[in-house]
Amino acid sequence: MERTYHPNGQVKEEMWNPVRHENGFTTYHREDGPAYQSWYVTGQHKSIIYQVNNQCHNNNGPAYQSWYFNPNFTIDLRPWEDQLCTSKKIEYYINGNHHREDGPAIKEWHENGQLINEHYYTDGRHHRTDGPAVQVWHENGQLICESYIRVDQRHREDGPSYRQWAKNGQLIKEEYYTNGHRHREDGPAVLEWNKRGQLIKEDYYINGEYHREDGPAAQAWDNDGKTVHISYMLNGLLQVDDKEPNARTWENGLLTMESWHLGDNHYKVTHYKQGVLNDTVYRHHFRKHRVDGPAYQEWTESGQLIREEYYINGRKHREDGPAYQEWTENGQLIKEIYYVDYYYHRTDGPAIRRWDKSGQLIKEEYYINDTRHRTDGPAVLEWNKRGNLVKKVYYANGYCYRENGPSFVEYYPNGSVKSEEYIIKNKLHNYDGPAYQKWDEHGTLIKSDYYLDGVKQGPLIKRAR
Image 1 (tube, rainbow, N blue to C red):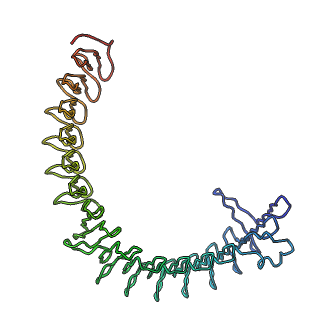
Image 2: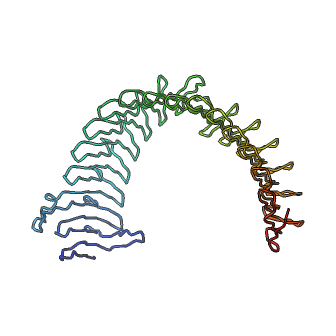
Image 3: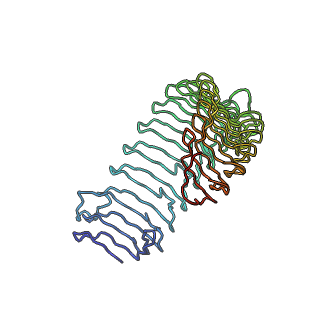
């Protein structure tokens, strides 16, 4: 047995056969009494633990017990300590598992002596057949919640298995469970009220799934009694109806969402801002998907289409046109991208095109199977706002490359060449002359460098063009 002491000489801890583990925990062993005890500096008991073979265990009472500190305690009160000092927590264990057959296995108190909670356990599992297995209270004694549990599953046959109250005593939630699943055949399985007692939520479940045949399976209201959500569901799924929405939500009286189940887990969802159409998305098993049109569209408050996307099984895809398009609020097209199976891809033109807000084309990019590539011209072209070409870049199979000329060319706004680069597989390279040249706006050569396979060759050369 080991002991530690407070500075005043009072025993602080008493430990029997302690085993200190790498995770920082210490376990104990004693068969004929408490394996661990601790005391406050005044001599008042702080905690008692019964352990056998490093497991909490006591056949004759709680295996763990603790008390709050009582500043008025003196050593003379020791025989009546349990009556004069407020219990903090008790726990009953058998062979390391919470277990008690004649009452709660865990009880915990507020410092004012009011119960915090009670838990009933059998062989380490929440379990009680004649009442709630868990109860929790406020410091004022008002019950917060209670749960009816059998073998670690919420279950009750004659009423709600879970109930919750506000601090003022108002019932704010009820849930019905059977064998761990929300379930009720004669009404909603979930009900919620606000602190004034006004109903704000009602959900119907059968065997753990939203289900109701004669009305909405889910409804919710705000504190003014206005509907904020409604869903019609069978067997956990929105009812199939491609004409009328089977789910709707509102905020401040304005519609914010409508949803349709189109069949076979295909859904259409429309969102609104301030009651005005904002976007529509089509999904299949939660992934964006539509075979007969765009899977996503977005509009401005005035009704102008500003974005359109095509998806198949969650991947951007379209074979007969751009899979992504974007417009300004005035209807000017500013971006279009061609995708096939989520890869940039187009065989008959640029896969990416961008315009400024005035409609001036400012960029084109050519891709095959997500790789920059073009055989009959530059794969990247850029223009300024006046329509003058400012850059062109040649690519083959993803590499910057051109067989008979510079693969990278830049232009000044006046149309004169600014620079030229000869690049093979993304490295500066030219056997027949300089790999990099630069001119001023008047056409005077100001820099000329020679490279082979990305390595600079010889001194800097300056000469007239």
